[in-house]
Structure formats: C-alpha cells, structure tokens
Length: 394
Ligand code: HEM
Image 1: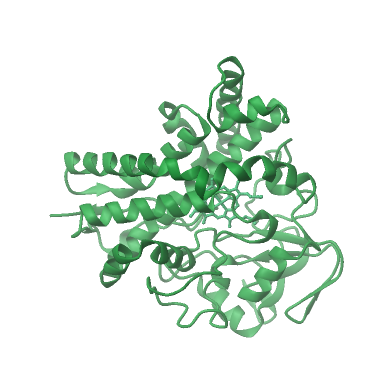
Image 2: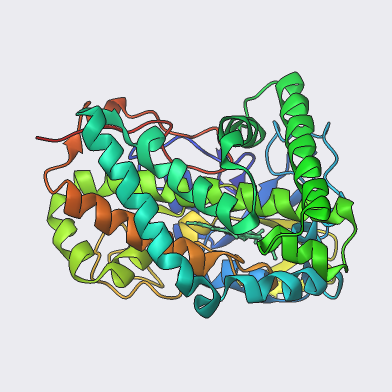
C-alpha cells in the first residue's frame, strides 16, 4: 500500500478510532503531495498537508466534473449512474452555481434560527425516550441517527415515517463493501422514494424546502429528485457520525466535557477538525498544469485529498493529535472548501452543539457500556464513524 514514493491505495484501517490511518501521517511528514496510483491505474497524486489540500479545493484550475474525476477506491461501484440531472456536487461553475444559488439562502444562520427550538425539542424527546428505555442503549440508534435524519426530513418536507427505508438505503449506498445487487436495489428504492415525494409536492404545494423548489419552477422533477437525494444523504450521515464519534471521543476524554458545556461553539469546531468523518476523497482533476507544494500536477491528472490528514497537519495546528475543546480550530477542512464547501455547515454546527450539550447535561455520568476496543468502527463506509455506540448511565 505505502511505497517509498507514495500510495497505491487509500488506507482506512485505524489503530486509534479518532486518528487518521497512520500511513497518511507518515506520508504527510515526507511530502504533503505524493504520487498516488488510482484503482484504474491512473498515476495521480494524494494531498495530505493542510495548505496543499486547501489549494486544490479552492483553485479553479481544479475541476470536480464527474467525467474527469477518477474513483479513489477499487470498490467504488460503477453500476449506478453518477451523472444524473441535478448532480451539482459533480459540476463546476457556472453550472454548479445555479444550484448553489437556489440552496444557499435555505441554509443561512438567519434562515435556520427558527429551527433551533425544534432541534432542541427533538433532542430532548429522544433523551427522554432513552431514560424511559433505561440503561444501556445504542446511542447511534437512540439519538445520533434519528436527530439529524428527522431534522433533514422536516427541512425538506419528507415523511419521516419512511426513515427505516431511507436510512437503510443511504447506509447501503455509503457502504463500500456492499454487494452490487444491494447497491442497485438501494439506489432504485431511494430514487422511487424521492420521485414520489416530488410528485406529492406538485399535487400538494407546501412551504418546505422541496415545496419551495417545486414552486420556484427552475428545476425539472428529475433535477429535484437528485437535489433531494444529495441533501438527504449528505445531511444526515455526516452529522450523525460526527455526533456519535464525538460522543465516543468525549467519553474517552472526560476532562473535556466541561469545555464543551462552557463554550459549545468552540468545542464543536474542534470536534469537527479532530474527527473529520469525511475520510475518503474528495478528488479533483487539474484542467491545466498546476504546481502544488512543489509538485507539478499535469493537466488531466487527478488528486485525492485527505481532509483528515490535513486537519492533523502540525504545520497548521499545534499539538494536532490532541483533542483540545478550547482551541481555536477555525480554518479546518472538515467541511471541504472552495465552491463545493458544505452547503449545510451551519445546520450541522447547530445540530452538533444542541445535541451534544443536551446529551451531557442530561447524562453527566454517561459512559461506554463496552470496552472501547469493541466499538465497531465504520472503516469501510464513505462516511467514517461508529456503527453502534453502547452507552450506560447511573
Ligand atoms: C458534520 C456534518 C457534515 C460534514 C463533516 C460535511 C462535510 C462535507 C464535505 C467535506 C463536503 C465537500 C465535499 C467535496 O468537496 O467534494 C460537503 C459538501 C456538501 N454537504 Fe456537507 N457535511 C456535513 C453536514 C451537512 C449537512 C447537514 C448538509 C445538509 C444540507 C450537507 C450538505 C452538503 C452538500 C449539499 C454538499 C455539496 C456541496 C457542493 O458540491 O456544492 N452537509 N460536506
């Protein structure tokens, strides 16, 4: 996997659940941009340093177009169409800009402010249900997954009653080890679910995000289905895993809990940096020759970016491998950067702040119900985190 010149595969196995795979740190210490052989044999690059990753994300000479970017993992599935109408995550400006202009106003702090009491209520209801159930529980199923899932459904105007179906489909689509048959079935099911939802908004106009996009009239139904799928999947898996892994990190570092409750905004930023659940890719392709960190990336060459390694770069952060909830972690790349910077970052911050403070206020003596080494890690998932987090109290 690791050669003296670079990498031939993205390492995913971890020795510590919170630290990026060790070969990435070793590589970063040698060269922040190193050769990387993509699974299709393409000789490209991997960037692991903060400055280099930021450059690739923000320089318009790097493209995210689906027809240019190469898959990073051998098990990336090619059987499902990558380029649907409305797949704005894989477009460059100006095509990409049209969708961001539609979505941007929906996710500003001002627009999200009225949602805060509702998110607090959702958190309290789920914590109450944990009390009723009694210790121990799996925090992923009881709290970390339903909260962002429910919030995303309410924002989009999707029926949460279908949560078991779309959570399952999303899980399969994000599982790099899923069979081709399961992947295609999940893809079809997800598209059917969202196609019905868009048709329903046409028949019953509603003042929710999907309803407003239908009323806006600038997108076809096909585009709206894709946009809804991106938001639903990007909007619950990432937050849910940061929430569950963040709780795990706080259970392993109990001295940090006071800092969380004292200044949740600063604490959440540090958790995002330290955990960086987006652990595979993103990938960009050079449209012309570009020099990055002393390396010449030739036109047509792809660069895979390790956001996790970049966020632990000692050239950017002091004691980068230490979780310090009082540090100023701004400038981290957990939400990416450039034109594809996460659309939902303000929502994610609100959810994480609300959920984590409510959890540790309600259960000040929360602890793991199993040895830390037994917590199942999501190493083969597109979004890193934990599959389950058994917790106990009292
Ligand atoms: C802790 C939570 C989250 C993390 C760590 C995260 C991370 C990321 C990252 C790294 C990217 C950039 C991918 C790239 O450059 O290729 C991204 C993009 C995106 N995220 Fe998030 N995200 C989170 C929460 C959310 C939420 C709550 C939403 C809901 C709206 C959301 C919606 C999106 C969308 C739509 C994009 C694509 C933006 C584009 O291509 O223009 N994310 N996210």
